[in-house]
Every structure is written in structure tokens, then in C-alpha cells.
Image (tube, rainbow over all chains, first blue to last red; front, side, top):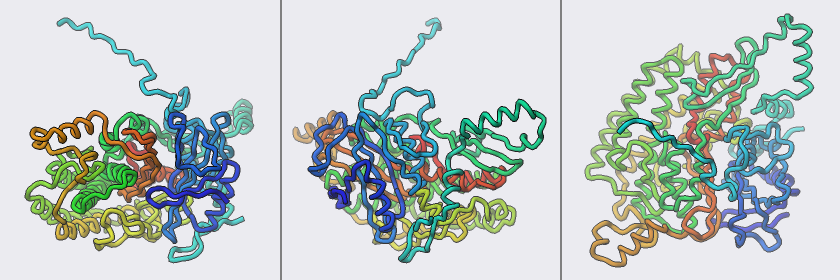
Length: 155
Length: 441
């Protein structure tokens, strides 16, 4: 269904497209992958020449990374989904795995990738009125000016 | 419509029914009302302010600096009288951008950063990070380093669970338990101080091995620990486990079943309390856990009491492992002898030009890690602690993500508290044992 590669530790990595990965997750769930262990994202804008993608997968700026586990066969699989910079939207996994709720909110907060049909897509770690998405590569550290006040004490 | 969560094999059959699905969506972390609902409420308010039936539902804020919330967890509770209907954890008060910071630190500095995430069990985060880096580097650490790591992690599990016993007792009104729990934890931390130099935030497990070898006479210190702690655990049993008051506060409170726990990605004692046997030390053995003998403790009812009992008995199992490590500790190097990764000993720098160059390179630039991405997971006292690492070939991680078990486990909170009394909310929060440093990172 989608291209699969293997990472250095021998774990299976799948590369579905953004419109087909819900079907793939449903299929994996039926296969026995009973838990989404982790869901995160990577901003590849400062590392454009990555070579670990299959040939027919077009690298995009963002990548959603989902780790799933099958408790019976003790097997793990990782899904890497390319997300376009212009339209950073992915379908939510909430209906299949409610445990992804907080993780998707974190990705939304940190990367600005929206999840359609998520029940409560709000910022989770940053303040609600925060501007920008901290884990994007163009969000530099030390952006907020810190004001130091000199003490008026006599020496 | 039903969805199979898991169907065959040794694990119990669990099915999420449609009403459960609706409940998950409703009661999960959602505590927001739609615009139309809001207008209808405000319209009603303006016309019938004195209607007493409108006043029974109350939204109450708890935290973020409530003594029982283990740090800065804030909860929004929707109360019907004394009963908690819906609730929502609000987090982020301790967010310091550690994942972003990790991108500016080299791999040898990285352990210093991650150790501050879960401050009650810092060695596990160091371990997950180091395992991920070592997998990308393709190096194997010497056996002694592996066994030292295992020893320190099991001791850390003991100290973390003792901390839980202390705070759990305090939350439920057994205040003396707090003193006892801290007392025993201090004994373990004293051993840590001798080995690593620090009580917490050790930066001891590093990519390539551990920072220093065990000190002379560590066996005696360890034997002393193994003598002190077991009788004190029996004291806890007398003080807590058998007490009717304590049992009544915990039994049947905050119940979760296995299929709900799996759907919510809960791991660790929360998943095991439902009777589901899953422990990465047994099921995906890392380090040398396949060479030691221990049992995985599981519960039956999935309530707060089971989670308490699991943690208490996991201390006993960890002591069993520590006893075996004491016998089986191999000799040899405590870190990998690769000049590109491990800094040379201080004495070599004075006599060897090459050693000086390597030392300079490691501490200014750091070592380079081949490009790629990797996920490494360990069983922390709170569940699966994973580290997802992306390398672009430079000496800093391109992206470092820690899958914190507390962060994910916190999602079970609204389900555990639902339809319970507000007085039991404290018992439920405590039984999840969240460490906010790891939740917010």
C-alpha cells in the first residue's frame, strides 16, 4: 500500500501520503497494532537533502511521525507522513486512537500543523495568545527580548 | 459499530463499543461548549436568573499550585454538586522548551538537558537518549556499562516509587507516610551521590557508556541498602496496605479497563493495573534485562489501590534485580573505547598529542552522528519513555523528541475522575503519579 523502508535498528518505516494514512492506520489496527505510542513532527526546512526517503516520496517541509506497536507480535512500526508547507493539515487519529489527543495538540502548538476533526485543537504547552510555533526551524531561540534593570543600590 | 482493540493471543479481549467511543470524545479533554449552547445559557440567565436548577453545575478551577497536583498541574472541573462530571487538565506551566534547547546542544551535552525532564527518575531519560544516540552511531557499549546502567536505573525506579509512596500517603491524609517515604528515598539518593556526585539530575548515563565507574566499596553500600529497604516496605504494608481507612479511600476509585487504557496510550503501572501484562523490560528487553529474573506486577481492578500496590511491589522486584546485579556485575570498561566519542582520561592529555586533540574536538565541536532517524524506548517508573532522534550528520541533534509517559498518561485523568467525588480527585491525580517536568518539558 505504501513504501516501506528500514531504519538502522531494523524497525519498519512506512511512508504513506497524507490522504491515505488514515486508511493505513485502520489497516494496521486491524492487523493488531493496538497502540499509538507516539506522535510527533519534524520541520525539515533546514535539512532539505535527507536521503532516507523512498524514491517516489516527495520530501516536504514537515513530517508527522507516528510510532505504533503491536503487543502480540511485539513489533513496532513507524509512519512518516509528508506535510506540505502551504497547507499544513492532516486528519486526526482521535477516532481511531483517542490517546493521540494531547500529542496532536502538542504538534499543533509546536509546529502549527492542524488536525481536522480533532475535538479540541488548542495550544497545549504555550500560552493561548502566543504568536508563532516554537519548534519550527525559523523560530529562533532568544527571540524574546529580556529586559534587565540595573539596580540603583550604592556601591 | 464496534472496533476491535485486540483480538487474539495471550492478552484479554477488549472491545470499544460505540457508546464508549462517544464517551471518550465527550469526556476526553473536551471542556468547551458550542456557541449556540453558550447563547442559550446566557439567554436563560437573563430571563430566569433565579431558577435554582441552573445553579447546580459549577466549573471549578483547581491548581496550578495546589499541593496535591505534584507541581503545576491545573485542572478545570465541572461539578454537579460534589460529583465530578467532566474535567480537563491544563498543562504548560513548566514548559521550558527543552526539545528546542536540545537542538542547540551537542550530543555529549544532550544528557545534561534531558536529565532535567523527569526529575524524579532522571536516569531513565538519560538512558533513552543515550540508547537512541548509540543506535544511530552503531556502537555497542561494554557489558559493565550496560550492567551499571541497569543497576542505577533499578535503584532510580526504587527511589521514584518511594517518592510516590510518600506523596500518595500525604495526599490521602497519611502524613507520616510522607516522612517515611522521603527517608528511604534519601538512602537511595545517598548511593547516587556517591556514584554520580549528585542526588538528582545526574548526567551519569551518556552516549557511549556511563560517566564514571562505580566507587570502591559500592558492594557494601548496596548491601546496606538491600538490608534497610525490605523491612521498611513491610512497615508500609502495616501502615497503609492493610488499613481499612486507606483501602476505602483507594479501592474502586478511578477505575479504568484494559481497552480504555490501550486506546488512551497509557503505559506503565496504569496499564498494568488493569490486568494487562506489558512491561518493556520483559517484552522488549533492552540492556541486559533478559539475563535477570523478575516478575511483572499486574493488578486486577484497574483502580487507584491497584496502582498503589503495583508500585509498592515493583520496589520489591527492583530489589530482586539489584541483588542479582550485585552478583553478576562484570568487570571491564565502563565506557566505549572509541576515541571519537569518549574523552580521553585526564592523565593521557598530558602525555599524548592525539589525546589532547580528541579531547579538544569532543568538548568544542562534539562527535558527529550519521544522518538518520531512530526511536528508542525504555520502561521508566511511569511507563514507556521514548526518545525520537533525527540526525543530519552534524554534532547536534536535528530534532530530539521525548515521549514522556506522564504527558500521555495524564490523558486518562478525565476518565478516571468522571462520576467520582471531588474528594477522590486528589487520590486519582496522585495515583497517576505525573511528574510535571516531563509533562511540559
